[in-house]
Length: 67
Image 1 (cartoon, rainbow, N blue to C red):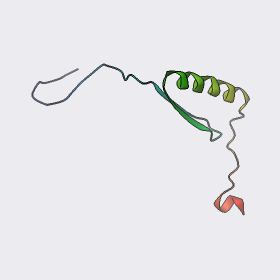
Image 2: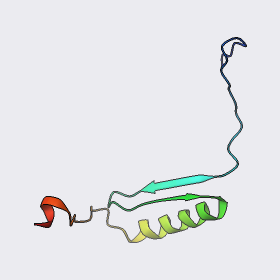
Image 3: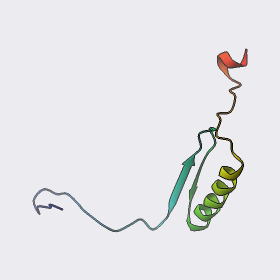
Image 4: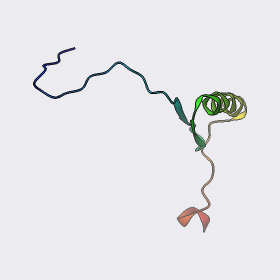
């Protein structure tokens, strides 16, 4: 990786202290988590959701589709 000491760029390979995660299923279900335990819980929740989800989008109950 190129880095010149005059260009002022800061390059770092250090990773953040707080893990974050997110997922979005084709059915429309989304979730996010921050923190080690919450991310682990999100992974377990997604595994359970993926097991029972059919992947078809949920029917919308807003705007034109509600009528």
